[in-house]
Structures are given as C-alpha cells and as structure tokens.
Length: 183
Length: 202
Image (tube, rainbow over the protein chains, first blue to last red):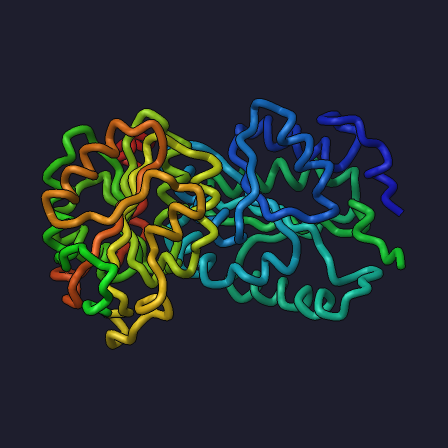
C-alpha cells in the first residue's frame, strides 16, 4: 500500500511528492508540463497550488519535451512528468533533440507495468523503457526508497544541468505505492 | 496540393520568399524556430541570425519549442515556422498554446499539402482539412490565411502587437528549400542561447 503517499501534507518533505516538489524548487526548476498519471496526482495538484511553478497538461509527452527544451534555451529550467507508457513515445525526440543538442531534459516517470500490474499492455510497455534508456546511454535511476529520494533527485538534476545531458528518474511503486488493482 | 479547391481564395506563395520577408522585418532580436526540413533550410538560406533555431529532427515540435522560449522570455517576440505535415503530427499542441495564450508567440504554417522532402506525397489533410480552421477550433482564435505576400506581411506586423498568440497560414508551392542548414546540433543550440542572451560566447 502507498506508505509514503499516506502522509499527504502539501509541499512538505514528509511525502515522496513533497520531496520532489521541494527538490524542483531548490534547483530552480519552474516549468513542469505533464501528461497526467494517477500516482502523480498529488504532486501535480501541489505544483498547481504553488505559484513558484508554471505547470500544465500537454496532449503528448513529446510536446512537453519540446516545451522544456525551448524553455531551457531561453534560460528557464523545466522537468516533464509522465508515466511509463508515455516514456515509450519518446525515443525519437530523445535521439533527435534532447541528446544531440545537449539539453538537460529532466524526466520523472511514474512506473507502471511491474510489482502488481493488472494491465498486460502496461507490463509489456514497461519492459521497453530501460532498454531504450540504455541504448541511448542515458542516465537513469529507479527510486525505490524514500530515504534515497532527495539525494538521487537533487544530485541528478544538478548533474543533468552541469553535464548538459538528459536524465530519467523512475518512481517505483515501492516508493509511491503505485496503482492498485481494485476490481 | 489541391489548387482546385473552390473554397480557397489564397495565393500560392513561396516558402523562401515569405521567410525572407519575415526576417527582413525583425529589428529586435526576435527568436525564430524553424521546423524540420525545408522550413529550417529556408530559414538558414534567408540569412543566419544567432536568434534562429534549426530543428534537425523531432518532427512536429517547432511550435512546442517556440512555446518554451516564449514562456522563458515573455518580453521577446518568438516566431515559429512549421510545415503542414509537421503540424499534423502535433495538432494537440495547438490546444496547449491556446490554453497558455502567450502574447509573444507568432506561428506560421507553411502549407503545400505535400511531404515535399520525401517525394511530394500528399498529406492526409491535403484535400479535406483546413489547418487554420483547426487552429481556430483548437482555441487559437487569432488565426488567418494570408491572401498574398502583402497580407502575410500585414499579419506578421499585426501579430507583433497582438494580445494573444497568432497563427498565420500560408499556401506555398512545391519547391524545395533553397539552402541546407549546417547540421551541427550543439553549435546550433549554443549559438541560439547566445542569441537569447542566456550564454556568453566562449
């Protein structure tokens, strides 16, 4: 069950989404377009509630990557939120925009398809994610533990910016509680 | 290209000519984002500026990239040049732009009804859809077809003082781009960031 999500104080460091929000803020990551996901809902809600952030839904994950890429070149940092199946739509834009143009694209991917997945299609698409990341030699981390979340997220954002390279931070159901089969 | 469609009363123009007319109007270091293929080839050929960004892939993302620049720098005018085939890949982005409504974004759709660069195959929209009508229906109410070159220049001027995003559709011929962008993504990005005042030259 969603242990960390149970503590839902908005924007505080007591929940996984509170840590993500505070880490984005501390690193001046203001622009957060997303394609929504059930697990990301409390994070998205709190981003909208905080005037520090410009956050909005896009029709496709690719579009969000284009937006934060443009914003980076204009001097504003951004991050994209999505779920596993959304990541699966990104191979072309990673290989033709983010990586060759050396853009520090920061992605948070809510992981579906494992640890209790109930939709076969989700479990299959999940298996494509790490091979795609590895085939492009992209930095990626799967965050499973609350006590490691801040360190991994903070260091990864800083590394992306300083090395001008994209990073994918995969939020495991072990961290977030995931989406539960309830029928 | 369907030149026989009776509802069309717009002149068939030329991409390089229109791009050159746009560039000639820019006096305030405006950003210009050129979409994949001929659109950025003609932007390159119209005379390189550090404020130009040339896409070498990621088909369909000229408007989203331009939106990002416009959000990051609300005081700078941002232009985006996109082909009709490219726009068809990201029609949803029109609704995102309409929702955010940046007043400093002008979008130009170069519509020849074909994928010129791959062998001039007609797009699925060519004989059935009106891209400007799609933009209006997506919430971009300040969207119009340019009747001719003079009208294009007028619409560009008008967009520079508009209170919301503007989209201009232009019907163009089937000519390829007249130049070829130097394909060096890091250099393109770095020079663009200099042009945006974000980076100092090395």
